[in-house]
Amino acid sequence: MLTKRIVPCLDIKNGRTVKGVNFIDLRDAGDPVVLAKQYTDLGADELVFLDISATLENRKTMHDMVLKVAEQVNIPFTVGGGISSVEDVDELLHCGADKVSINSSAVKRPELINELSEKFGCQCVVVAIDAKQIKGEWFVHLAGGTIPTDIKLFDWAIEVEKRGAGEILFTSMNHDGTKAGFANEALALLSDLVNIPIIASGGAGTIQHFADTFVKGKADAALAASVFHFGEIPILELKKELRKQNVEVRL
Amino acid sequence: MDLKIVNYGAGNIKSIQFAFQRLGYDAILSNNPDEIIKADRVIFPGVGEASSAMKMLKESGLDTLIPQLKQPVLGICLGMQLMCNHSEESDTKGLGIFNVNVKRFSNNVKVPQMGWNTVKNLKSDLFKNISEDDYMYLVHSYYAENCEEAIATSHYEIEYASALENDNFYGVQFHPEKSSKSGVQLLQNFLDL
Image (cartoon, rainbow over all chains, first blue to last red; front, side):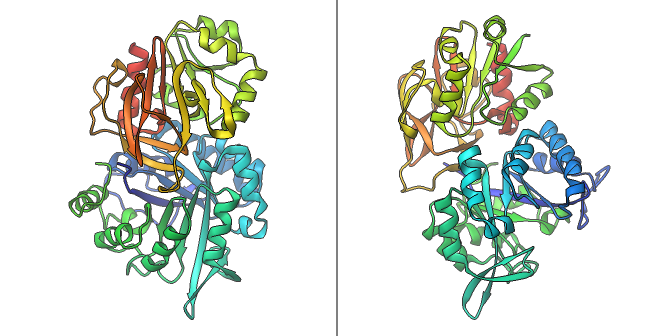
Protein backbone atom coordinates (compact mmCIF):
# COMPACT_ATOMS: atom_id res chain seq x y z
CA MET A 1 0.00 0.00 0.00
CA LEU A 2 1.03 3.56 -0.63
CA THR A 3 2.36 5.07 2.58
CA LYS A 4 1.83 8.47 4.16
CA ARG A 5 4.95 10.63 3.85
CA ILE A 6 6.93 12.47 6.52
CA VAL A 7 8.60 15.54 5.07
CA PRO A 8 11.14 17.69 6.95
CA CYS A 9 11.43 21.20 5.54
CA LEU A 10 14.72 23.11 5.54
CA ASP A 11 14.82 26.88 5.17
CA ILE A 12 17.84 27.97 3.17
CA LYS A 13 19.51 31.36 3.13
CA ASN A 14 22.63 31.96 1.06
CA GLY A 15 23.08 28.21 0.68
CA ARG A 16 22.92 27.53 4.42
CA THR A 17 20.15 26.23 6.64
CA VAL A 18 18.59 28.76 8.97
CA LYS A 19 16.27 28.68 11.99
CA GLY A 20 18.89 26.63 13.78
CA VAL A 21 19.03 22.91 13.88
CA ASN A 22 19.84 20.95 16.97
CA PHE A 23 21.04 17.52 15.96
CA ILE A 24 23.50 15.63 18.04
CA ASP A 25 26.82 14.70 16.44
CA LEU A 26 26.53 16.94 13.42
CA ARG A 27 29.73 18.35 12.07
CA ASP A 28 27.99 21.31 10.48
CA ALA A 29 24.34 21.90 11.28
CA GLY A 30 24.23 24.73 8.78
CA ASP A 31 25.18 22.56 5.84
CA PRO A 32 22.02 21.50 4.02
CA VAL A 33 23.77 18.50 2.45
CA VAL A 34 24.86 17.10 5.82
CA LEU A 35 21.37 17.63 7.20
CA ALA A 36 19.70 16.09 4.17
CA LYS A 37 21.82 12.97 4.54
CA GLN A 38 21.06 12.80 8.23
CA TYR A 39 17.30 13.04 7.59
CA THR A 40 17.55 10.35 4.94
CA ASP A 41 19.22 8.00 7.43
CA LEU A 42 16.63 8.85 10.08
CA GLY A 43 13.80 7.74 7.82
CA ALA A 44 12.43 10.92 6.21
CA ASP A 45 10.44 10.07 3.08
CA GLU A 46 11.09 13.28 1.22
CA LEU A 47 12.70 16.66 1.80
CA VAL A 48 11.74 20.24 0.99
CA PHE A 49 14.29 23.03 0.62
CA LEU A 50 12.85 26.49 0.78
CA ASP A 51 15.10 29.28 -0.45
CA ILE A 52 14.00 32.17 1.74
CA SER A 53 16.65 34.53 0.41
CA ALA A 54 15.63 33.84 -3.19
CA THR A 55 17.27 36.68 -5.06
CA LEU A 56 18.95 36.73 -8.44
CA GLU A 57 22.44 36.80 -6.92
CA ASN A 58 21.61 33.79 -4.81
CA ARG A 59 20.41 31.64 -7.65
CA LYS A 60 23.81 30.15 -8.38
CA THR A 61 24.38 29.32 -4.72
CA MET A 62 21.04 27.51 -4.71
CA HIS A 63 21.93 25.57 -7.86
CA ASP A 64 25.20 24.45 -6.29
CA MET A 65 23.33 23.31 -3.22
CA VAL A 66 20.74 21.37 -5.25
CA LEU A 67 23.51 19.69 -7.20
CA LYS A 68 25.30 18.64 -4.03
CA VAL A 69 22.10 17.33 -2.43
CA ALA A 70 21.27 15.33 -5.57
CA GLU A 71 24.79 13.95 -5.58
CA GLN A 72 24.55 12.59 -2.05
CA VAL A 73 20.92 11.98 -1.19
CA ASN A 74 18.84 9.05 -2.45
CA ILE A 75 15.34 10.15 -1.53
CA PRO A 76 13.23 12.66 -3.49
CA PHE A 77 13.40 16.37 -2.75
CA THR A 78 11.51 19.53 -3.67
CA VAL A 79 12.98 22.99 -4.10
CA GLY A 80 10.96 26.16 -3.61
CA GLY A 81 11.42 29.90 -3.28
CA GLY A 82 11.63 32.57 -5.95
CA ILE A 83 10.72 30.32 -8.85
CA SER A 84 8.79 32.23 -11.50
CA SER A 85 9.63 30.88 -14.94
CA VAL A 86 10.04 27.75 -17.06
CA GLU A 87 13.78 28.53 -17.23
CA ASP A 88 14.10 28.60 -13.43
CA VAL A 89 12.53 25.16 -13.23
CA ASP A 90 14.54 23.77 -16.12
CA GLU A 91 17.76 24.75 -14.33
CA LEU A 92 16.71 23.28 -10.98
CA LEU A 93 15.58 19.97 -12.50
CA HIS A 94 18.84 19.78 -14.42
CA CYS A 95 20.70 20.18 -11.13
CA GLY A 96 18.83 17.12 -9.86
CA ALA A 97 15.76 18.47 -8.03
CA ASP A 98 12.80 16.08 -8.30
CA LYS A 99 10.07 18.64 -7.86
CA VAL A 100 9.72 22.39 -7.61
CA SER A 101 7.29 24.30 -5.50
CA ILE A 102 5.73 27.55 -6.71
CA ASN A 103 3.59 29.89 -4.68
CA SER A 104 3.20 33.64 -5.26
CA SER A 105 4.34 33.38 -8.88
CA ALA A 106 1.49 30.97 -9.61
CA VAL A 107 -1.07 33.35 -8.10
CA LYS A 108 0.35 36.28 -10.07
CA ARG A 109 0.43 34.30 -13.32
CA PRO A 110 -1.58 31.05 -13.10
CA GLU A 111 -0.56 30.05 -16.66
CA LEU A 112 2.85 29.22 -15.20
CA ILE A 113 1.32 26.03 -13.76
CA ASN A 114 0.15 24.95 -17.24
CA GLU A 115 3.52 25.76 -18.79
CA LEU A 116 5.47 23.79 -16.20
CA SER A 117 3.13 20.82 -16.26
CA GLU A 118 3.19 20.62 -20.06
CA LYS A 119 6.96 20.93 -20.29
CA PHE A 120 8.09 18.82 -17.33
CA GLY A 121 5.05 16.75 -16.35
CA CYS A 122 2.65 17.33 -13.46
CA GLN A 123 4.68 15.02 -11.19
CA CYS A 124 7.26 17.73 -10.54
CA VAL A 125 4.91 20.69 -10.05
CA VAL A 126 3.99 21.36 -6.44
CA VAL A 127 1.79 24.37 -5.87
CA ALA A 128 2.27 25.76 -2.37
CA ILE A 129 -0.72 27.61 -0.94
CA ASP A 130 -0.49 29.75 2.19
CA ALA A 131 -3.94 30.56 3.49
CA LYS A 132 -5.52 32.18 6.50
CA GLN A 133 -9.01 31.66 7.88
CA ILE A 134 -10.72 35.02 8.36
CA LYS A 135 -14.27 35.05 9.75
CA GLY A 136 -14.78 31.45 8.70
CA GLU A 137 -13.44 31.85 5.15
CA TRP A 138 -10.02 30.75 3.96
CA PHE A 139 -8.09 33.31 1.89
CA VAL A 140 -4.86 32.80 -0.04
CA HIS A 141 -1.92 34.91 1.15
CA LEU A 142 1.26 35.78 -0.71
CA ALA A 143 4.91 36.41 0.08
CA GLY A 144 5.22 33.98 2.96
CA GLY A 145 1.74 34.77 4.20
CA THR A 146 2.29 38.52 4.57
CA ILE A 147 0.11 39.81 1.72
CA PRO A 148 -3.61 38.96 1.78
CA THR A 149 -5.58 38.38 -1.43
CA ASP A 150 -9.30 37.98 -2.05
CA ILE A 151 -8.73 34.55 -3.63
CA LYS A 152 -10.52 31.76 -1.79
CA LEU A 153 -8.46 28.72 -0.86
CA PHE A 154 -10.82 26.07 -2.21
CA ASP A 155 -11.42 27.86 -5.54
CA TRP A 156 -7.68 28.25 -6.00
CA ALA A 157 -7.00 24.59 -5.15
CA ILE A 158 -9.47 23.43 -7.81
CA GLU A 159 -7.92 25.81 -10.33
CA VAL A 160 -4.33 24.68 -9.71
CA GLU A 161 -5.36 21.06 -10.15
CA LYS A 162 -7.10 21.89 -13.44
CA ARG A 163 -4.02 23.73 -14.64
CA GLY A 164 -1.81 20.71 -14.04
CA ALA A 165 -0.39 20.84 -10.51
CA GLY A 166 0.76 17.39 -9.36
CA GLU A 167 0.51 18.13 -5.66
CA ILE A 168 -0.65 20.85 -3.25
CA LEU A 169 1.38 21.97 -0.24
CA PHE A 170 -1.14 23.68 2.02
CA THR A 171 0.09 25.82 4.92
CA SER A 172 -2.43 27.21 7.35
CA MET A 173 -1.24 30.61 8.58
CA ASN A 174 -3.57 30.19 11.56
CA HIS A 175 -1.77 27.03 12.64
CA ASP A 176 1.80 27.67 11.52
CA GLY A 177 4.13 28.08 14.48
CA THR A 178 1.43 27.24 17.08
CA LYS A 179 2.43 23.58 17.58
CA ALA A 180 -1.26 22.98 18.29
CA GLY A 181 -1.99 20.63 15.39
CA PHE A 182 -2.66 20.87 11.65
CA ALA A 183 -5.71 22.50 10.00
CA ASN A 184 -7.43 19.16 9.63
CA GLU A 185 -10.90 20.38 8.76
CA ALA A 186 -9.67 22.45 5.82
CA LEU A 187 -7.25 19.70 4.80
CA ALA A 188 -9.99 17.07 4.68
CA LEU A 189 -12.16 19.40 2.59
CA LEU A 190 -9.25 19.97 0.20
CA SER A 191 -8.66 16.24 -0.12
CA ASP A 192 -12.31 15.69 -1.03
CA LEU A 193 -12.31 18.57 -3.52
CA VAL A 194 -9.24 17.71 -5.57
CA ASN A 195 -7.79 14.42 -6.76
CA ILE A 196 -4.09 15.17 -6.32
CA PRO A 197 -1.98 14.52 -3.20
CA ILE A 198 -2.08 17.09 -0.38
CA ILE A 199 0.86 17.90 1.88
CA ALA A 200 -0.23 19.28 5.26
CA SER A 201 1.90 22.04 6.72
CA GLY A 202 1.71 24.28 9.78
CA GLY A 203 0.98 23.30 13.36
CA ALA A 204 2.96 20.13 14.04
CA GLY A 205 3.74 19.86 17.75
CA THR A 206 3.19 16.26 18.81
CA ILE A 207 3.19 12.78 17.33
CA GLN A 208 -0.60 12.67 17.68
CA HIS A 209 -0.88 15.78 15.49
CA PHE A 210 0.65 13.78 12.62
CA ALA A 211 -1.69 10.83 13.21
CA ASP A 212 -4.64 13.23 13.25
CA THR A 213 -3.70 15.01 10.04
CA PHE A 214 -3.39 11.69 8.20
CA VAL A 215 -6.66 10.27 9.57
CA LYS A 216 -8.92 13.27 10.20
CA GLY A 217 -7.21 15.63 7.73
CA LYS A 218 -6.88 12.91 5.05
CA ALA A 219 -3.45 14.36 4.20
CA ASP A 220 -1.11 12.33 1.99
CA ALA A 221 2.03 13.81 3.50
CA ALA A 222 2.89 15.99 6.47
CA LEU A 223 5.57 18.65 6.50
CA ALA A 224 7.26 20.12 9.55
CA ALA A 225 10.44 21.97 10.43
CA SER A 226 11.27 22.78 14.03
CA VAL A 227 9.89 19.62 15.70
CA PHE A 228 12.32 17.65 13.55
CA HIS A 229 15.24 20.08 13.59
CA PHE A 230 15.30 20.26 17.37
CA GLY A 231 14.81 16.56 17.82
CA GLU A 232 11.49 17.09 19.63
CA ILE A 233 9.95 14.39 17.49
CA PRO A 234 12.37 11.70 16.28
CA ILE A 235 11.16 10.50 12.88
CA LEU A 236 11.60 6.81 13.65
CA GLU A 237 9.56 7.07 16.84
CA LEU A 238 6.91 9.04 14.99
CA LYS A 239 6.62 6.42 12.27
CA LYS A 240 6.45 3.54 14.74
CA GLU A 241 3.59 5.24 16.58
CA LEU A 242 1.81 5.98 13.29
CA ARG A 243 2.03 2.33 12.32
CA LYS A 244 0.67 1.37 15.73
CA GLN A 245 -2.32 3.59 14.96
CA ASN A 246 -2.76 1.80 11.61
CA VAL A 247 -1.39 4.63 9.49
CA GLU A 248 0.70 3.13 6.66
CA VAL A 249 4.29 4.37 6.81
CA ARG A 250 7.63 3.27 5.44
CA LEU A 251 9.73 1.71 8.20
CA MET B 1 31.97 -1.45 -16.79
CA ASP B 2 30.68 0.52 -19.77
CA LEU B 3 27.40 1.98 -18.57
CA LYS B 4 25.31 4.22 -20.82
CA ILE B 5 22.20 6.25 -20.11
CA VAL B 6 20.09 6.83 -23.21
CA ASN B 7 19.92 10.58 -23.56
CA TYR B 8 16.96 11.66 -25.65
CA GLY B 9 15.96 14.72 -23.68
CA ALA B 10 13.43 13.16 -21.31
CA GLY B 11 13.70 13.33 -17.60
CA ASN B 12 15.87 13.93 -14.60
CA ILE B 13 18.94 11.91 -15.53
CA LYS B 14 21.24 13.67 -13.12
CA SER B 15 19.85 11.66 -10.21
CA ILE B 16 20.44 8.38 -12.04
CA GLN B 17 24.02 9.38 -12.83
CA PHE B 18 24.60 10.32 -9.20
CA ALA B 19 23.11 7.02 -7.99
CA PHE B 20 25.60 5.02 -10.06
CA GLN B 21 28.38 7.37 -9.03
CA ARG B 22 27.62 6.50 -5.38
CA LEU B 23 28.03 2.84 -6.37
CA GLY B 24 31.39 3.66 -7.91
CA TYR B 25 30.40 3.62 -11.59
CA ASP B 26 30.46 6.33 -14.22
CA ALA B 27 27.21 6.31 -16.16
CA ILE B 28 27.70 8.21 -19.40
CA LEU B 29 24.89 9.99 -21.23
CA SER B 30 24.71 9.10 -24.90
CA ASN B 31 22.43 9.39 -27.90
CA ASN B 32 25.01 7.77 -30.20
CA PRO B 33 23.77 4.34 -31.43
CA ASP B 34 27.33 3.00 -31.93
CA GLU B 35 28.23 3.81 -28.34
CA ILE B 36 24.98 2.46 -26.91
CA ILE B 37 25.27 -0.87 -28.79
CA LYS B 38 28.76 -1.44 -27.35
CA ALA B 39 27.82 -0.69 -23.72
CA ASP B 40 27.73 -3.45 -21.08
CA ARG B 41 24.58 -2.04 -19.54
CA VAL B 42 22.02 0.45 -20.85
CA ILE B 43 19.66 2.61 -18.79
CA PHE B 44 16.57 3.93 -20.53
CA PRO B 45 15.14 6.74 -18.37
CA GLY B 46 12.09 8.92 -18.84
CA VAL B 47 9.93 11.39 -17.02
CA GLY B 48 7.13 13.49 -18.43
CA GLU B 49 4.53 12.82 -21.08
CA ALA B 50 4.53 9.63 -23.22
CA SER B 51 3.82 10.95 -26.73
CA SER B 52 6.36 13.78 -26.56
CA ALA B 53 8.99 11.42 -25.12
CA MET B 54 8.28 8.95 -27.91
CA LYS B 55 8.57 11.75 -30.46
CA MET B 56 11.99 12.71 -29.08
CA LEU B 57 13.04 9.08 -29.16
CA LYS B 58 12.02 8.77 -32.82
CA GLU B 59 13.77 12.00 -33.76
CA SER B 60 17.02 10.58 -32.44
CA GLY B 61 16.39 7.27 -34.24
CA LEU B 62 16.76 5.40 -30.96
CA ASP B 63 13.29 3.85 -31.19
CA THR B 64 14.58 1.23 -33.63
CA LEU B 65 17.87 0.71 -31.79
CA ILE B 66 16.58 -0.03 -28.30
CA PRO B 67 14.52 -3.17 -29.14
CA GLN B 68 17.60 -4.66 -30.87
CA LEU B 69 19.94 -4.32 -27.90
CA LYS B 70 21.42 -7.57 -26.55
CA GLN B 71 22.93 -6.45 -23.23
CA PRO B 72 20.84 -5.91 -20.07
CA VAL B 73 18.66 -2.81 -20.52
CA LEU B 74 16.80 -1.15 -17.65
CA GLY B 75 13.84 1.13 -18.38
CA ILE B 76 12.91 3.44 -15.54
CA CYS B 77 9.45 5.00 -14.99
CA LEU B 78 8.27 6.43 -18.33
CA GLY B 79 11.18 4.55 -19.94
CA MET B 80 9.56 1.29 -18.82
CA GLN B 81 6.15 2.43 -20.07
CA LEU B 82 7.55 3.29 -23.51
CA MET B 83 8.92 -0.27 -23.73
CA CYS B 84 5.34 -1.63 -23.53
CA ASN B 85 2.93 -2.16 -26.45
CA HIS B 86 0.75 0.88 -26.04
CA SER B 87 0.01 3.67 -23.57
CA GLU B 88 -3.34 5.32 -22.97
CA GLU B 89 -1.43 8.55 -22.43
CA SER B 90 -2.09 10.50 -25.66
CA ASP B 91 -2.80 7.10 -27.35
CA THR B 92 0.93 6.40 -27.78
CA LYS B 93 2.33 3.34 -29.54
CA GLY B 94 5.26 1.91 -27.58
CA LEU B 95 8.35 -0.10 -28.50
CA GLY B 96 6.55 -3.44 -27.95
CA ILE B 97 9.35 -5.01 -25.90
CA PHE B 98 6.95 -5.89 -23.10
CA ASN B 99 3.71 -7.49 -24.20
CA VAL B 100 1.45 -5.34 -22.04
CA ASN B 101 -0.54 -2.11 -22.24
CA VAL B 102 -0.28 1.00 -20.10
CA LYS B 103 -3.45 2.48 -18.59
CA ARG B 104 -4.40 5.44 -16.42
CA PHE B 105 -5.40 5.04 -12.77
CA SER B 106 -9.08 5.85 -12.26
CA ASN B 107 -10.20 8.87 -10.28
CA ASN B 108 -11.18 6.62 -7.37
CA VAL B 109 -7.63 7.23 -6.15
CA LYS B 110 -5.45 10.32 -6.16
CA VAL B 111 -3.56 10.69 -9.40
CA PRO B 112 -0.57 10.73 -9.66
CA GLN B 113 0.29 8.02 -7.18
CA MET B 114 3.09 9.77 -5.34
CA GLY B 115 5.23 8.23 -2.65
CA TRP B 116 6.51 4.95 -1.27
CA ASN B 117 4.83 1.63 -1.95
CA THR B 118 5.81 -2.00 -1.43
CA VAL B 119 6.78 -4.40 -4.23
CA LYS B 120 5.33 -7.91 -4.05
CA ASN B 121 5.53 -11.18 -6.02
CA LEU B 122 9.22 -10.63 -6.69
CA LYS B 123 10.47 -13.00 -9.36
CA SER B 124 13.81 -11.94 -10.79
CA ASP B 125 17.48 -11.64 -9.86
CA LEU B 126 16.85 -7.94 -10.24
CA PHE B 127 15.23 -8.18 -6.78
CA LYS B 128 17.97 -10.21 -5.13
CA ASN B 129 18.27 -9.25 -1.44
CA ILE B 130 15.16 -7.09 -1.70
CA SER B 131 12.20 -8.24 0.37
CA GLU B 132 8.47 -7.85 -0.07
CA ASP B 133 8.49 -5.50 2.92
CA ASP B 134 10.79 -3.07 1.16
CA TYR B 135 9.48 0.19 -0.23
CA MET B 136 10.19 1.90 -3.54
CA TYR B 137 9.49 5.50 -4.52
CA LEU B 138 6.91 5.96 -7.26
CA VAL B 139 5.41 8.94 -9.08
CA HIS B 140 3.05 8.03 -11.89
CA SER B 141 -0.43 8.46 -13.30
CA TYR B 142 -0.25 5.52 -15.72
CA TYR B 143 0.58 1.88 -14.97
CA ALA B 144 1.40 -1.35 -16.81
CA GLU B 145 -1.24 -4.01 -16.25
CA ASN B 146 -0.32 -7.10 -14.29
CA CYS B 147 0.88 -9.68 -16.83
CA GLU B 148 3.11 -12.72 -17.41
CA GLU B 149 6.22 -10.59 -17.75
CA ALA B 150 5.64 -8.93 -14.37
CA ILE B 151 8.53 -9.56 -11.96
CA ALA B 152 7.03 -7.35 -9.24
CA THR B 153 3.58 -6.02 -8.53
CA SER B 154 2.35 -3.13 -6.43
CA HIS B 155 -1.10 -2.22 -5.23
CA TYR B 156 -2.76 1.13 -5.86
CA GLU B 157 -6.46 0.78 -6.54
CA ILE B 158 -5.57 -2.43 -8.39
CA GLU B 159 -2.64 -4.84 -8.55
CA TYR B 160 -0.37 -3.68 -11.37
CA ALA B 161 3.08 -4.57 -12.74
CA SER B 162 5.67 -2.38 -11.01
CA ALA B 163 8.54 -4.24 -12.76
CA LEU B 164 8.78 -6.21 -16.00
CA GLU B 165 11.29 -8.57 -17.58
CA ASN B 166 11.61 -10.03 -21.08
CA ASP B 167 14.96 -11.63 -21.99
CA ASN B 168 17.63 -8.98 -21.54
CA PHE B 169 15.06 -6.20 -21.02
CA TYR B 170 14.01 -5.01 -17.59
CA GLY B 171 11.67 -2.21 -16.64
CA VAL B 172 10.78 -0.66 -13.29
CA GLN B 173 7.94 1.78 -12.65
CA PHE B 174 9.56 3.09 -9.48
CA HIS B 175 12.66 5.26 -9.24
CA PRO B 176 15.49 3.10 -7.85
CA GLU B 177 17.73 6.19 -7.83
CA LYS B 178 15.33 7.77 -5.30
CA SER B 179 14.36 4.68 -3.33
CA SER B 180 16.98 4.81 -0.60
CA LYS B 181 18.66 1.50 0.32
CA SER B 182 16.31 -0.83 -1.56
CA GLY B 183 16.82 1.24 -4.71
CA VAL B 184 20.59 1.08 -4.32
CA GLN B 185 20.33 -2.71 -4.01
CA LEU B 186 18.27 -2.92 -7.21
CA LEU B 187 20.77 -0.86 -9.20
CA GLN B 188 23.60 -3.02 -7.88
CA ASN B 189 21.64 -6.14 -8.88
CA PHE B 190 21.22 -4.74 -12.38
CA LEU B 191 24.96 -4.26 -12.66
CA ASP B 192 25.51 -7.80 -11.33
CA LEU B 193 23.16 -9.47 -13.86
